[in-house]
Image 1 (cartoon, rainbow over the protein chains, first blue to last red):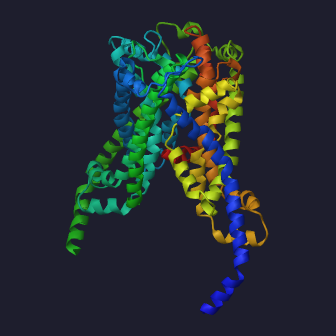
Image 2: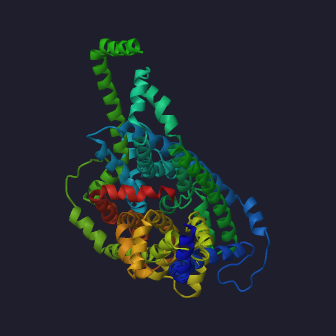
Image 3: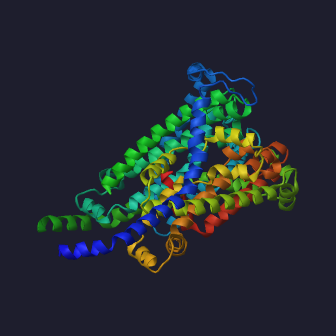
Length: 309
Length: 296
């Protein structure tokens, strides 16, 4: 037995070595274009970004000074940056429960519904595929104080008009509502996938055990078994909400009076409108730190999901 | 045990008929009320967009608003949108060019790399995989600043290349295709090698044809993402003729501020239509393609 193995492997080496060589050559060749692009579009820019964040570089400026951590100190005390960070978190704090809660509610109501399910699925998913910028202009019109139908209805009901986008205390909740409008369908589909993985006989068993109302069934079976999906949806929704930019850029431009200034919009203004590259680089790194924090959370959650599965 | 089961059965029989039916009707009513209310909220901007796009300015600015227009102004509005101050069809064409260019390069680059990571042993494989996973966490807004400076230095701002370049490498595509290729049977690859096929042929003629579902799903994800992207085009494009649909929509809204809502909503309709129509046709593929990237 061992003799045959020895003979077989004794014959094989040149051929196997050749195969090994071809394999590593092909592997390197296949991976090279991707590696090169990874270097050019991710790694080198990251290093440059890090370097920029320690300088006062401005596009077109002749002399650039090394500042150390001054940009980060500046960010700590900068009222504009401070405001944009707070606004971003307020936005996330509204979108997160709204988009996750409503997504879950709709998924639970739709699950196991036969005839109307695909109709509702299409309807709720529509905003996910549509161009947010185009829809944002429509929302702007819908919310218009005098021409918009929403205020028209409010007037007809005898309620005062609401300046959704021009009243500082309303603007973030309004943008968040649009954020929820865009995300609900996405979360609904993720929840529907999670729901279809729950074995049906569990519900029948629970029914025999006296769980007769839908709310009972939800609390004893659906909610605990959906836990991993829910965590996953929470993390992805947080990241998406944290990156809010489009609606702000089109509808409010950070206004009124900075009430809708958010992190990415602040970075956009510093970097590409005022050309304060050094400072914008520092803000970008702070932004990246938050995204990485969410991503680490996501990895942990995904690992847990694998254990459940 | 038997008695308990009989008891449960009896109880449900004795309690059920009338109360159960009533209960079911009430719950159906509640469920559909919630679902319909949600659907109205979701559809509101779409319906309003379509209706306004066929209304005349007089009706749009009228104090008493009506849902259905009395006079149809569709032709004028859409003509104003298409042939107005901003070249709308040009934006759509730019969108097609940019999405197609990005997708083609992404697939050409990601497929061999994913195959190498899944099936070949080569030096640096683990390190590359780690870089790919790291890359998954980095949004475009992070490398944007240095990339912008680089493109400005090279005089490449305001080109299609500038819009597409940062997205040529999709770490997500590599990650996704690698998962898919890993489950491809090794025996077939070995057999192909014995037949004298080169690795290049194995990838493109044997493995890729089996990976169509993954490639199609990724294509949906990529096209939806880049048709709708605003951040990067906003940074590198100032020339109206090169604007992608969302950026064009911004230019258009600026050009038409407050003056012509009919044309504005007609433009929004035209820009939203391609993806929405594609979605309605290939519903399953779209939902799969976009949500499988929930990882993103």
